[in-house]
Image 1 (cartoon, rainbow, N blue to C red):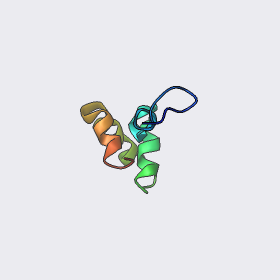
Image 2 (image 1 turned 135 degrees about the horizontal axis):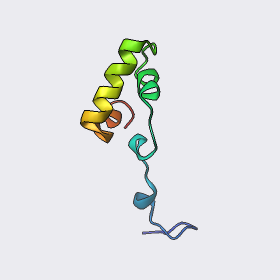
Image 3 (image 1 turned 180 degrees about the vertical axis):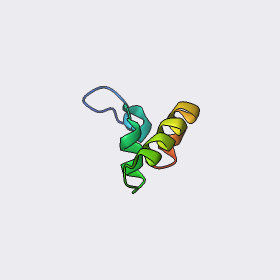
Image 4 (image 1 turned 60 degrees about the horizontal axis):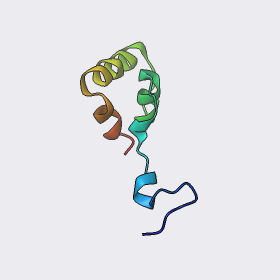
Length: 60
């Protein structure tokens, strides 16, 4: 296994979409929806209930 300049193996550098902070509006837009109040509230609920899993379903 080859290490990079930061000393980590390639599989240790892999990032997923859920590793960064997400706002409900971001999730709505990533899903290709308009950020209407209803869609934003649905995304807010899903983020609260599912956490990173809500994001991983859309942005793996």
